[in-house]
Length: 294
Image (cartoon, rainbow, N blue to C red; front, side):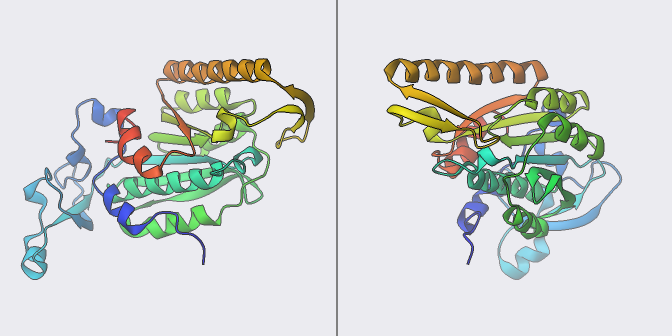
């Protein structure tokens, strides 16, 4: 039986979170994304458990009379957000301990679930998976679609070539309505900057979740070794001594700082993540500090 992407107890903790959008930061309240009074649409969509701070006017008192539990009615509003979640499925993601790809799958599962619970439309794509340049996931909405989202994520097989500039431009052209967009990637290889600029120019609100494995931050190398690029199989002979590892750390730090500056220029969030970080802490605390979630 395959390993669960997310444990049920953790899913229950995600019900109270939402993905941040500039539209909300500009003055809308979170509840307006679930309100039957926003626009003319009052189509009933789903229930969710009441949590402290929710609007009492949204409580389904008939359900309370039957079950003695508080539930909120959720409605489809005309101006719902479309949340885009993109995964880097290149060969370099199938590496590390914990593996970057499995961590990316679980992170995408949690973020998509948060969007579905909040009645936002969730769509996305995997770059370099299942023999296609861009493997698309059709837009869905509502908590009942969470299993469809999880099943799609679990079916992906990474390891193909990714052309970031081309693939992200293709996604921008086909995506339809822009909105919050989360890219989960190790950002290795050329073309990511140009591709992200295309997305930003189309009005996407970008969050870059930059995954690296612990071994990439602190490689356990010593003596004469041969390093092989998993993307193109090019090799290089090195002598791993103290000076070389120090220079590696300096260049790694400069690379991440460069990405932070690039994100700021795009008006994007940049979040450096190590796959040894507990996913629960990342979602419930770390991404909230970076204002990706609230």
